[in-house]
Every structure is written in C-alpha cells, then in structure tokens.
Image: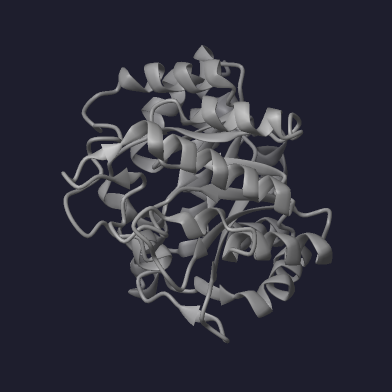
Amino acid sequence: MTYPIHRLRRLRQSSTIRKLVQDVHLHPTDLIYPIFVAEGISEPRSIPSMPSIFQHPLSHIAKYAQEVYEKGIRSILIFGVPAKKEEHGVHAYKTDGIVQNAIQEIKNAIPELCIISDVCLCSYTTSGHCGIVNKEGVICNDESCRSIAKIALSHAKAGADMVAPSDMMDGRVSHIRTLLDQEGFEMTPILSYSVKYASSYYGPFRDAAECAPTFGDRKTYQMDFARSREAFLEATSDIEEGADMIIVKPALAYLDIIAKLRPFTPQPIVAYSVSGEYSMMKAAAMQGWIQYDQIVLETLLSMKRAGADIIISYSAIDVINSLQKG
C-alpha cells in the first residue's frame, strides 16, 4: 500500500522534480533594486551599516546603472542625498536636483531600465521628517502634500517611469495624481508606500539616505505595528486616490499583512525588504552563522508565498546571481 506521505517524498527526491512541482517562483523581473545617488562626492561612498551598498556620485550613476542592468536588474528605485538641507525641503523639487539629474543621466544611457523615484522630503529637510514642520514642531499635512506632489511632478518631467511617495501624509496620492494629470503625465503610475509601519528596521537606511529625524520620531504619520487592521484603511485610501500599486514596508515581520491584503485588492502588492533585514542577514553571514545566498532566497520566497507580486530588495543582485547559478 502506498501512503500519501510517500507520494510527497517521491516528489522531493530529485532537484529537477522539486523545481517542476514548485508553486512559488522568484524571477529577476520580480525584483526592484534600490540605488542611492549623492551630491558632493566624486567616488562611491560605502555605508558601514549596509555592507556592499554605496552612495554613488552623479558622475558615476549612469555607468553603475548600466552595470546593474547587465547583471539582470530591470527596475531600480532611486533615492537622492542632497548636499544641502533646507527647512521646507525645497531642493527636493528643483529641476536640477540630484534625483532629477540622476534620472536624466540613467535614461539617456539605458532607456529600457525602469526608473522608480522615491518621493519624500526627509533627506531634504533640516528636521529629517517626511513632511514640513511648523514652529510648534507639528507636521503640516496639507502643505507637505503640496510639496510632495511638486517632487513627483519634477521626477516625472525628468523621465521617471514611476513615482513612489513614501512620506505617509494623508491625501498625498490624490495630490500627486491630480498634479500629474494636469501637467500631461496621466500615464505615469504611482507606486505608493501605502502600508508603511513606524519600524526599527529602518536604521541602516537612515544612514544611507542621511535622513534621521533631528527630534521626535515618525509615529504620528507612519503606522503602529500593533495595529494590523489599519493596513486595510491605508491601502483602501491610496487605491481610491489613484495608487496603481501598493507597498508593504517592512516585509519580513509583516508577511501576515501581505497575506491579508492579497485577497483584498487586485492591485500589485510590492514587499519592501528593508535595510534592517538586509543588514541582519549580511552581518550574520559575515560572522559565519548563516549561508547568505540560501537564506536570502528563502526569505524573499516567503514574501512571494505570502502574496507579494514584486519585491524591493538590496539583495537583488545577489539573488539574481544565485538564480543564475541554479
């Protein structure tokens, strides 16, 4: 008599058969690779808390983008690190700002590479907050939304294929969609950081983007990680305002949120495997405690298994190398 468990074991005996019956897959086109471009530097600058990740100078950004494209990356998420900060972050929507210039440089060199631009104020404001702060230390939501929309428009004009607001101001997707449509960019999609938690996993990113708040925290506008139902409200609001895709951030500790949202919306769901997740795996691997390539694949596959269509990952190039090796 053949027991059901034997049938399962028979399917595990051969690597070829295991791949044949695999029902969750990870492909290079599922991945978005984040890139930092910084003003005021002439050579790539390492980020100590994120091994193998660098801030890149504008003069090198097209060459670097070409390199990652040749490795199999087809979509990037670009973050700008300006040389100067200002109270209201006005440099974020300058025509010749660091992100705007970088988009143009990359598009001229590799037109087929999909450029997604992060839209936020935190790297540009003296406060380090994602919105404009008044004299009482309060985030001005509506004023911030107007600035966020200006940033998105400036990125679209520079040639961004998609804009990704990460600020978490209420109503900013509507402000962006309205302004883009008015200016003739009706076909520019919005990838919204819809479900973004006030997380401790962001520490290394704040080193990379030089955007740590100078006072307080971001808990008044980012989400409480003890409230899971709020994800539906945030996602619904952004989709109704015009978001074409939504991000859940962080990913690894929020797989339950991805799984709950999956049957709720037909919009593509993007899992952002954030800096803290990347740095923990890198640090453990550097100590010889884990096998980095295997644990990264297992981790990213868990995000696909939970229901994510796309993954933003600092490990994207490492993953593609592993996939190519089989």
